[in-house]
Image (cartoon, rainbow, N blue to C red; front, top):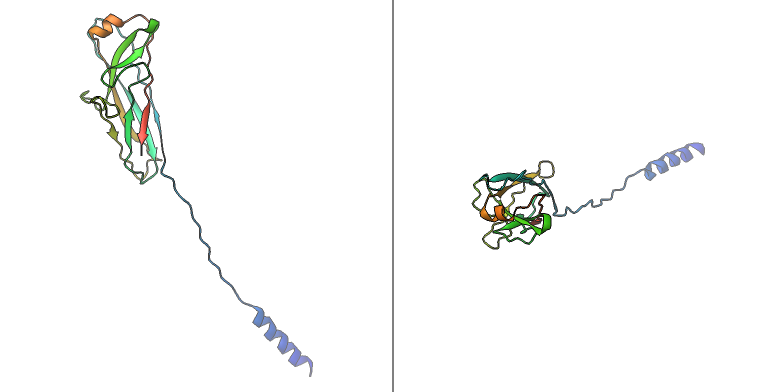
Length: 168
């Protein structure tokens, strides 16, 4: 008879020990407002002084930003060859310099720059998917067969390096 109360007590004891406990915890991350960009080169091709031809070429700047980035603005500097916003220069053989410029649209009416010297910056609209579909900004380049270029032209290659800056 002693076994029956002992077995009942063990069964009750096992049931009393069964249970659950809960705890909650926070999972978090911070998304940093960040942008990145890349640009293609502008190559005006071959210039023949005095032929009256205006050379035109474009660059595409691809921009990717996190969603919600505060209204980025794209600016271009005057270049590394000693030019100005109104008169950019490519450096060639024997320090010869040829004039060119960059514009915000295919109408070639507004110089693409940093907002100084009559130039304009370009606002960038960042969508919610710019990291999968980058925003594309076109830079329109123009190289004139001007009297200054005809006078300065020496045979050889000419280059300039323009820096694009995205402020966000």
